[in-house]
Amino acid sequence: MALSRRRFLVLAPASVAALLAACSGSKPTQVVVKSAPPLQGTPTPTQDTSEPIPPPEIDLSEDTIPQAGTALLSLVGQVTGGQVKLLDRVYPLTQGSRSIYAFIGIDAEDPPGDHRMDVEFILENGSRGVLQEQVTIIHTQWPIDAVTLPTAFLAQLLDPATTGREEGFLKTIYSVYTPQKLWKSEEAWRLPVNGILTTRFGEVRSYNGSEPSGHHSGTDIGADAGDPVLATNSGRVAMARQLELRGNMVIIDHGGGLFSGYAHMRSFSVAEGQMVAAGETVGEVGTSGLSTGAHLHWEMSAGGVLVDALRFTDGSNGF
Ligand SMILES: [Zn+2]
Image (tube, rainbow, N blue to C red; front, side):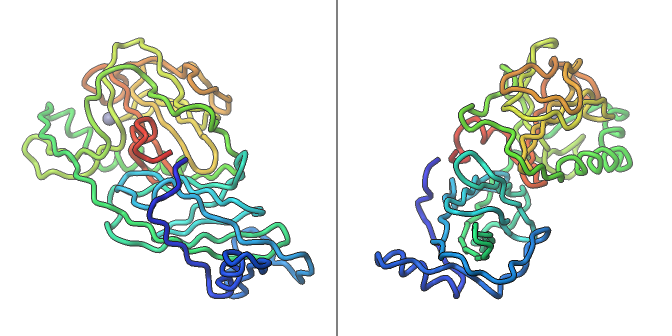
């Protein structure tokens, strides 16, 4: 993971002395922010008589993040839990193999500009602190595509009852937080199928001459029907069923609020609850649901936010 180049790190007031002490080589002081709001689901320490613990350090893959990008934040130190707050969202920290981490998904519609990120943490001795980091969200230029579809097809695609039902259902899955790391750092995030990129994430579409609107929720890869669809990384199958629009779809929970979804498949070969390894076949390319030809629609969601899946495989997320 690359260290961010434009680090702007601020400790909450009670912790500034501790950081300065650490930097000057003298004995670090305990980082305690008494005014920090209590974290949900964690006990409040009564009295702290333990040894001081130096403040943890933030390692952020990128501090300039495009809309629909994802940053990987790691907190290195003697930390047992915590959460990241950015805009109006909360990303719980999950224990990894070497640090505690969170994938920070940036929404396609998040406002560009500088934003403060609060990293709330709990140390091994029960004390709490907050680190602040500035991140810059940059505008992504979304491709606009004019699409002509048969009227009946379009009516089904744009029917708010159908889209609302399906998006609501997917939201209940993507908003789950599993407090275990189920993906493997030693496995590179891989393309689930070999083929031709036909529609990028976030594309804005004009249907039959209408005003361009919305964002394509995934990455479309054209491939032959029957080609194997592979898990981009390891995890647990959160969903494997037939949906109205996305057809046969499998969603893998990678833990810590990160999910990958594979749609329009001819069939799927895994069951809900099953563990899958990185690169394991989860189904076959098809054109089920509302689709005009054989392709894979590949989604990724981080912290309940749909993000650009290709950025996981092309290195542009910085991890
Ligand atoms: Zn698609």
